Length: 530
Image (cartoon, rainbow, N blue to C red):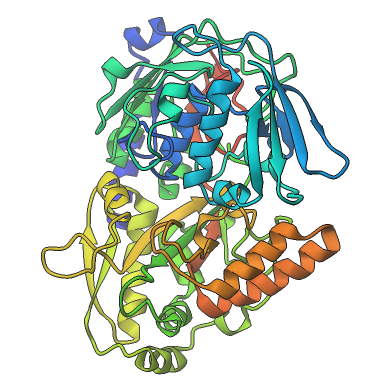
């Protein structure tokens, strides 16, 4: 990987010498060309929680509430709301003037099935559904949500920008079976998806929706007035970092999401480019064991894997410069309100002897272990190599299988047993946005519900779910803290995710762009191209 990045850096340096921006870029002041982290391969926002799908969802749809740059919750599509004194009845009224991209009005007939679909697929949504007794429309703009018992995270859920967004769709799409992919995107957000120009492997296009009525407040993260000041964004996939770097240097592209960190010193030397940490929260690297099949259906095998992983080595390989990363043994983002590391003491340094003992106790006898990853994303490529080294160090027979990232996302949903001719897997290499991980009810990796509807890997632990449920019901901050620590100790006993470190990921944009917001996902409202 280091050789590859060095080559890319040389190409970038060469590209920056005396190369003027091409005429077509100078004339296209109303179009921003974006290099996304990976391709948009599905347009159904409930297909998975991939960051590019969430970026797509937040461009074309709107949500009832949203989260600002400090993860504080504010109304978005909602004009007014009330909560009854017993906290069981929540009443919401939509802002006037909301309409879909086909110019039909947004009504509560769209809102209720949209929320029902989200509650079937999303981690926080499924937990919230267990508290909801009913949702009923009072009129086209007002509806009530009645709860079986108080749930302190209603607004948090209705504005979630973690996992799968609770976006409001037209009734037609919202009533599609949650496990059947939606193929038409008609949102009510600030951008309209240009379906005719979508190439699932390489390109997605969004145009400003002239009928969007923004809120009057100043924009902050994903909240406030989403005023679009350009006409169009084009997302062009460039898996090769050298190609992407050269395109940025020449002015062919305007914004690069998630460049390899090895390139940052060279990119920073280009006077026409800005390197900036856009997301206010760090990312998590991790390895997801598949709990459906041996060896990782046994918690002892997952414990063994965790004892074999050295976070410092993973971060040095994947990220490099230590100013961008830290070790972290919290499942909920170190430095955040729920970022406890309780229960992690045994895992803070390698113990290969203990790991080998636990692996033997789990019944593992050298069977092939399929490790699934990609070389398209440099961080995941490095993680994948370090995961393979860690597993081999305790005697696992590792078979690394490399796919493009879109195929990895498809395969990670496959529950079939790994083996010849199967697309099943034992470990998938990934990383998460901090906003996904910061809260026990949004973190997809620590949902251990035993109905196999949770995130890929499908760990089942009734005690962990009992403790997560207790946290959801905790009435005050003191009770939440006690419930969190009990839950976190249990997580380190069952290890649903092998933590590999916490890191920051800057973005790169050209200096003729202004107005970017600090947000958990790149947004292009408020941005001006000079």
